[in-house]
Image (cartoon, helix red, strand yellow):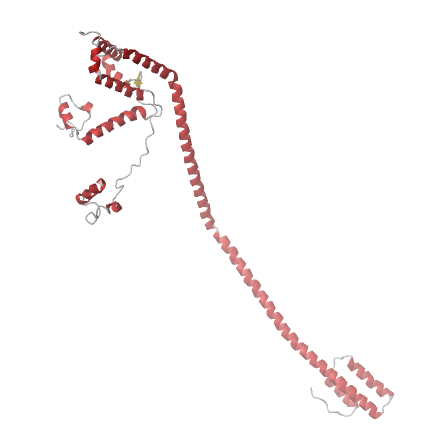
Length: 88
Length: 274
């Protein structure tokens, strides 16, 4: 496997579909690793959309939209009962 | 507490830490080694001007670019429309009274953002610029202050090179003062010596005068005696009177010469030797 990068520390986009389970299992699932993943994700978003000279509303609105969707998903169980038709 | 425990384990585990065996947990703070790596010398990169592009304030541009090769420009919009219709028809999204309030809220927000977004952005930019200008001013002031200090230091260092002028002037002053004292003392010596010599001369003059006077008195006395003894003629008497007057006026002849002359005229007296 000389053509493959020796370490399996590739980015997600470079991983082939067949290798995906192996790649996922290789990741660091300790609490420290998960916290690190959240931190990395946060700083990636922050540095891309918020920490700029001329920021726009998109930095905040994307977070709010995601929060709205998340809450809708969480409360779908109760909302199911307010459907207008039973069969779709 | 935790740090101490960690440090003690580190001290026992890593022999590269200095004096690990000798230290207790309380003393470790004094000899911890910091900043062993090289500091990065690169300057901090400046903030980017604009954030990642986002379309309609919700969907990042990368999504549109991701779908562009396969579906062209309208792909994402068609996908969006299809998804919305699907959610509505299958009632994955349920139309409730909350939908009305959501629609009106979102409509209001969109209106506000569209109308006042630019001006609020400019206001925020102006605040930022003020802050940056303040910092820049502080930086410039500090740089100017330091530059002034450097210039002052340089000028003072240059002054040090010119110290020899000062020393030359001082040396000249001292030489002149020495010369003046030397001449003053020379003059004083001259005056003192002259004083003493003048004294000697004055003493000699006085002695001579005293001798002269004494001689004149003696001569006068003997002349008078001889005149009264001999009962000489008027010519002789007048001649002797003339001699005495002549002597009284302080002639330059020595007293001894005068004595000899008088002795030739009268009997030899006992003269004081002087």
